[in-house]
Image (tube, rainbow, N blue to C red; front, side):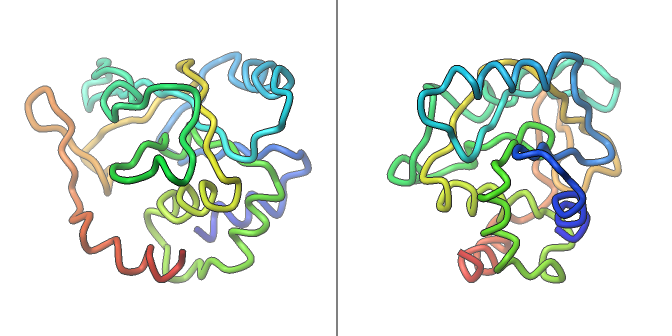
Length: 173
């Protein structure tokens, strides 16, 4: 969380894109986001776009939205019953005002890893919804040093116990 917060504090634009050091943006990402945002009558505060999932061998394992069951154009607070229907960091885009509210109460020391979890849920609650851009504008890479996700056969396999992450997330929210 501290690295994301430092990036946010250094950023000068109204829209902030996240990126982990081991993930990728695709060419044209910023242009596609600009078009998506300017086509909206009401500005969203939190956007997730789709990501390619790259396996340890660099081969495509599918789309993040497809694997997570992300459908439709948006998810609001009442839709968020179960699951993680957000993109991973390279697919998360926030309006500056939304991140400012989140970082004003996020303890970055508690979230040394997995900061996208409180950022995504915080973004949903602060903005009221997440708008989905169904374009592959980045890539999430699976590799042996990826702390959260691995590969089992042809499938993704979580490396962490999600239930252990809920108490600190609920405390934050």
